[in-house]
Structure formats: structure tokens, C-alpha cells
Image 1 (spheres, rainbow, N blue to C red):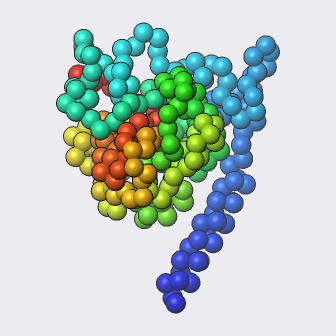
Image 2: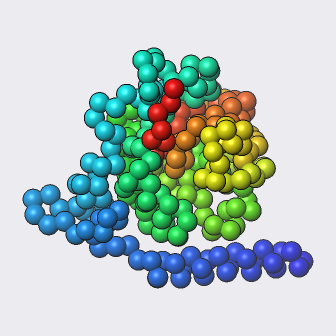
Image 3: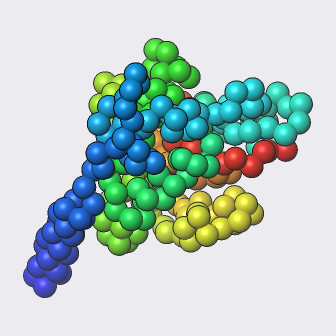
Length: 256
């Protein structure tokens, strides 16, 4: 009885806190990334990135990318070494590199409660998915889950907020019950490359996946791809046919 009341109290406190955040952190009138109010021939729609931020968010023209994971390449590789060694991922769509303005927007989104940023980031992500797959072949969008403890502390799962916008834009269902994170680890942002490769926080389990389904996994950032590969392996072990990935940003460090 005590634990049931405690859960209800925690849920209500979280709800009130989210309402306070919405009141204290309203959606800005200008560009959600830089704050500018654009006038003239090409004004930004309310709550949407200005043309300058859109251009800066995109991959630099001519940058060589791994055709599978979309990370920058340093060398004459057909695939980056990680993907050439074997991967459960069918492909990765990304908006751009983890650098301004995307890096700042993602940090503000995840760590300062500015959940309104899910909308402009999700719309940019939907455009990136359509560029990669003009006729999206997916059965559902699946957000990378947080461990329940971390979700309680943060108050939300940023990947789920992004996936909700992406699913709406692509006309795909949001699947949040097929995948769970059953063991937590150090936040990826605190780890170096070796730690990320060995971390992925990270035991994931999946069940109830439609046999043979092609799923679109959604997260905010892909650095080494270790978490995405661990999740994809769990989904495929549960029956998924293919797992592709949509992320807002990929690491700017070249892969060699």
C-alpha cells in the first residue's frame, strides 16, 4: 500500500514539475535554436529553425560519410571499419553533425527541460528520413528506452519525444512496449570512445515484435553506434527483420 501511494505521489510531483517547466520555459517566438526573429523574404515559421540554422545543421557539402551509419569518414573506405566488421543496422538517417546548432539544441532539450525542442528537431529528422528513404518501408518507430531510474530523474525520454514527432510526420505508429532497458550504465556523454563501445549502458530486452518487421529506431545522437547496435541486436533477436536508425546528429569525429 505504501509503495502504491509513493508511486502516485512521485507521478503527481513529476506532472506538476513538467507544468512548472512549461510555464517557466515557454516556446520562444523566434528560432528555437538561435532565438532570432527572421523577417524579410524567408521568415521562419513560428517555433521552427531559421534558414541560417537549417543550413548550419545540415552535413557540410562534399563531406565523405559512411553509406551505412552516416558518420564522417577519414580515408578511402567503402564503409567505416565498424560497419565493415559487421553490424545489425540496415542504415542510419541523420540531420547532421553533433556541432552547433544541433549540439546546443540537444543539450538544452535533454538536460534543461526544453521539451518544445522535440518539435523542430523531430521535423528536421523527418526530412532526413525522407531523404534517405523516399518511401519509408517501416512498420513502426521505436525510441531507444532509458532505464526507469534515469527516466524518473529526467522526467521524460528525449528519444520518445522525438519518435512521437517522427511517427506523426511519417504516418507510423509509435511502439514503446517492445523494448526495455533492464540495466543502467554511465551516461554516454561522460564516456570516451572505448567506454562507449563497451558500455551500452546496457542490457536491452525486446518482446512482442511483429515477426519480420522493419523497424525505425530513434535516438538523439549516434557516437560510436554501440547503443544502436545493442538495441538492434535485441530487436532482431525478438523477431524483427531489419532495424534502421534515425538520429538527430552523428559524431563529428572522422571514423578510420
